[in-house]
Length: 411
Image (tube, rainbow, N blue to C red; front, side, top):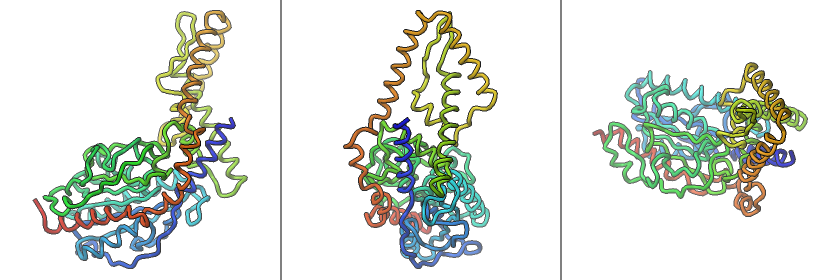
């Protein structure tokens, strides 16, 4: 239990790291949408604490604004933009963010993004779409890109010119800059263009180790080559260490919690952890314990760590009353089998459970490794300094090149 408490505390630190330091507002003017549709429209989704439901959709602020505003200046009249107003909250724990839990907030961002993308596509059928997301906003945009790439989004893949993700909590393990395209440093051209301008853009940022704290590992299907996933080394939001399963469990629980004050946080975290442990135990009983010929064996199809992570993941369906009842019946059958033949059943089962415990420790070895955590000593700065570190410059160049290609470099 001490290890679990440590993982939750680390998750809260990770949650604070998801908060963004606002960049000063950058004046810019967007090309009109409607009768004067631009060739490219960029949707921006800000990070935690950088937006609100009443935010101005045309205000170039925050990390995303620091990327998009220079595009408007470099390609006047060729590109328009809008930002997605949403809660940008982390359970009330982050200044500037709403009171909604992180999972509610990011889902809100995705729904608003779907609505605005659909509205733009209807109003400007010839306009290509791009999107830029940072931190929590990157998770919402990556979710959109996954669905579009699979043919399940609000627009077809050929409508999308490019997607830029920064500090993405859903970044796949060891993902290259272009997920699904190891070694690629130049974006694919926008559909319908030769891509002369885009061919001169280099997105060659070294891939960070680890994976996003949310551990989604999304694939982008037909959008592969047009989705860039950029992560600063040492940013815990997108490059959480390997072998830290309980950290991800804690992050998933914290993302669903009410963190507005210490009492609410303790109660909310405790309730969510209890539910996750109960759901994990139900899943383990139903899927990983097997009764055959008077024996009870633990033969897992996935690790115990993964069962715990899946149980806390709000994107996966939780066991219902029928599953919980079946698990209780399975447990009664297991205890009866053990009681009926302990000398045969107990030694084998104990060995299997001991191996599972050893695997759980191995899956969390990084939590007790000081050199691993030393690499994340500057995680807040790594997460908030994408603009200062120059990591946005290639994204600005990419979006600008897309605008020029769409304006005059048609195939």
